[in-house]
Image 1 (tube, rainbow, N blue to C red):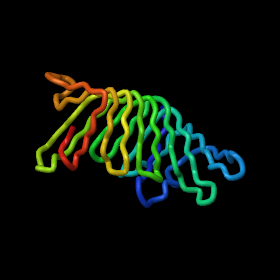
Image 2: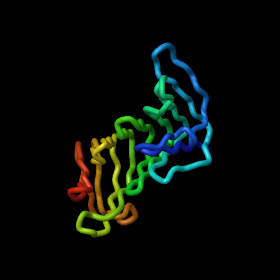
Image 3: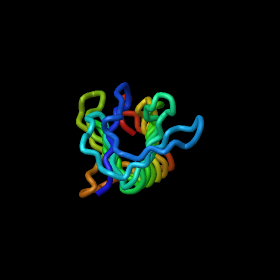
Length: 165
């Protein structure tokens, strides 16, 4: 079953997309929501789903600051799909971290060539600059069904603005 959480990285409140139980962690602490149900609305900017999620909201504004997602996590943006065991999405700093991940990147290079890449990583980090840092990772432009070659590295940096990996 799992849950769906939809969130825009910039500018739009995600309040309409959440189902959960609010827990006030104490004076000055963030509001924490434990989400265990699937929502029905999905935002077109990014979406994620998993078995369980915790939403951290600012106590004063009520806006979501971070989302932790556990178990069978699927994370998608317009040019990538990541699947892993755990994810942390920092809405304030427009960043994301995922553990034990498989990924598929797709889109066009700066020259306009269609490009696909697949691989795995012990962890993946994406900052506000949209650069992916993969740790203990593999990378290939071959389809997983016909994997002719791949590279492995302790650290891979993928910057689509300057090219790929």
